[in-house]
Image 1 (spheres, rainbow over the protein chains, first blue to last red):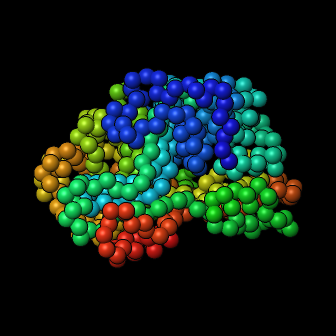
Image 2: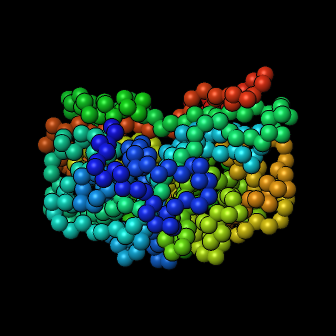
Image 3: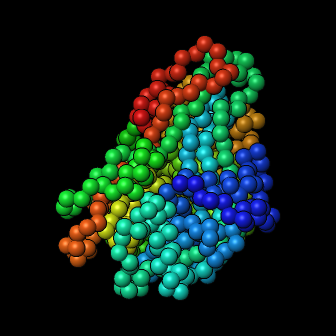
Length: 233
Length: 233
């Protein structure tokens, strides 16, 4: 499910100093394709937002529209209109983190233990989406991010559902992307000493076969669901 | 790898109003065992911390010591002494979120789409661990959370490594735990209308076979690594 890379993909990431990784620079990615790769591979994100004075990282689904209103693309988030986090988010700068775990890195010392991963942190001030057409579109984008093709199988949202939902848009403008891959990087003296195994346990989120709801009568698992389960199998 | 539940497991979660979930109460768990279950099932957490004025959710490994200095147990985090997030964390209340994805919930309407998941948010003011014995112990706990039994196979950290590492402790005191399981919950009128498939695509993080580093000479994959890979297989 790779996103088409838009014309604006040449926009550099990390346009500001604060989102430029200062440490572990070798893990920093500056290509916009690396950002889209992390977005594609993530099923959920963590919205970091200060709620009643405390920063919280709240897991939530998201959608990406690279042809959206913002030049580098738009991330959509949604939730209940009663959600404290979504109510307080538009009054502040927030961030959204996507993290994909690729492996456990087992080194010869505790210090060099690590994870193989890909992560993206997008920073910005979210916009509350008010216009009905964009709201409805954003909800389709959210559903289709998790299961591409799903929204076309569904009825349109009701007025009541739309009224109960807050939709936020965050521009894909300021982002930092990191990645660690490969073997552990051990100290030479640990390698020379020998005696301790080192390596990687690869990890991946994987799907099992779709389970049909008990109240479904006489319907096969649709093609878009089978495809998604196969991609994640 | 279930944690033994300590005597203090009867301490209620969410002792304060702010960490008591107000919405989706049916998803809130109040049992401390539910918290330990989420901690056990999580390989990484997201530390939510305000860095230079912006809340960030930073993926990082963690360790849990239920026999640690805090009554309900202690979460340990670590990182470089140069890390901005760890430098700024002790001057504020922060939170740590663990999220386990259990499935994609495909409902008959976009509105009822969801994820099956387990999540925990632990809130508190982190303590910088200064005492050398606790620091060294915390680093073992961190390594063993990801791969139980690993720390016993490793040399002790050097002074230089310890000096380069910040260790934070967060009490497992104030936490909220949520869980969603089972089929989609559809509107009666959507079920009666028929025609749209509904169900769940189960998800799980899974390990492939361990991959030995290129520079390992004549060592088999150790038992603790095989066991971890098998648990996640």
